[in-house]
Length: 84
Image 1 (cartoon, one colour):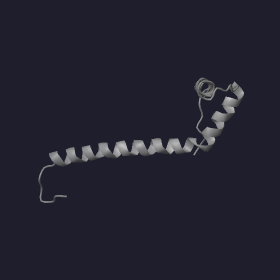
Image 2: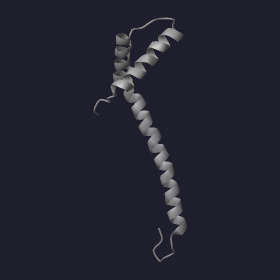
Image 3: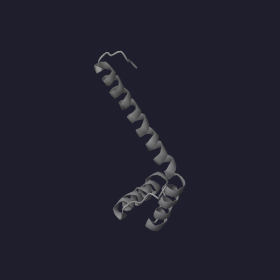
Image 4: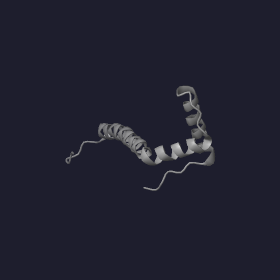
């Protein structure tokens, strides 16, 4: 799987959120550089778990929708000598 890349703007938003979390929740200051390294670490080490969970959630939604489509097709199916 190729690495997930974010734009500079997307990364800057996440870095600022990390800094704010440290400041507001931990009463600590963390520099932009350190927050960026922390973001990179979590992206590399934990990001795949969140990515995979998103895939599983999307798959579940699609499966549910396909059930609905299958039911709709069966409802309009015309009777023949060869029924499924």
